[in-house]
Length: 308
Image (cartoon, one colour):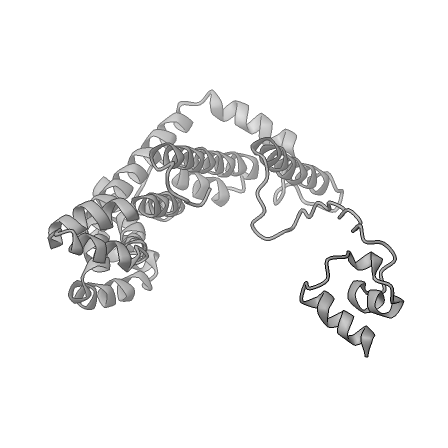
């Protein structure tokens, strides 16, 4: 009984002596537990490379990226030098390098590059000029969403190559039809992505702005638009990549120059090394543009938590 009383007193802090000085061993055992040492062992720090959303340093990120490209190049070199591999399908890096040097001295490469950049840039800028304001309205007003979004959803599921005959009838076979095809391939996707970014703006910001006396136009201009701009800029980065994927399809329309046209021509005559040169060039252009968009996004919207 006395042991139980002392146990209750210790548990409620009514006894001034430390736990280790209690006379009864059974009381000390119940309070302190069966541990042999009161000093906890220091926790060992473990590095988990695959922890969800764990950040890494910039230098380590770049090193891993270079390692990935090096591994891909090594795999390509190993596969292409196998005796069982037909060089018509997978040329060696040496063959591709020789073809790149020959094409670099040809004016056709630079003409193709200039025309493809013009077509993609024109189609992308037109899609951004129309799609961003329309997406802002679709994300802001349910009435506009009900009218516009079903049409956009309907058109964006239509395969872009299926629209080539229609665009040729509407715009002819000149540059306008190629630009229109790239515009169609990016515009409808961009409208939906911009609308989703606008909807992600918290309602609390809208309620606070109304409380402070802001009108509807001021809320759109000074709350919705600034809050959604980092995400919209990231959507533009993605859509710019899609615009470049449509350049091959766009240059099917009665084209005589362009990166996509030249790839199709090389494939028709089984000039695989030359075709790989143009494919690698498209990938390098896309990689450079993506890096430029990310850097500009971090510079313009350094205050926002956007995807890097």
